[in-house]
Length: 128
Image (cartoon, one colour):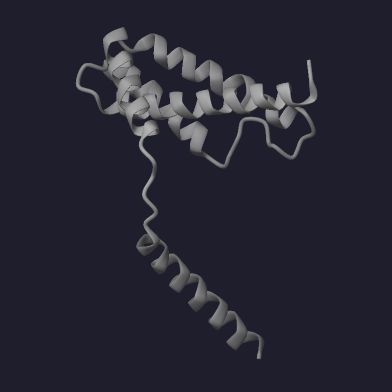
């Protein structure tokens, strides 16, 4: 294995996980997804997006094991609970979305920049 091959596999794997999370998100809103699968999906998505992990990331090596092992297992478990037709439909939708280039909407960043500007301005006033 060459030096760059390992990082390419990791990037592909990470992209696949990101795509599967998007599929689960769509499936959670689908009318044909069973209620128990929706519950498992919401738990998995909450865990994936939560800053709190089962094993804190600051613990060397072990901290990332939950992200590398637990999250993919949770995703795989959720996918098994969802009917194949729903998964296929959601994957097709995600593939179509991934093919489209994202439009850059700078307008959405303006409120965030204004909030940060106000925070910085207030901190400077307090310091002086």
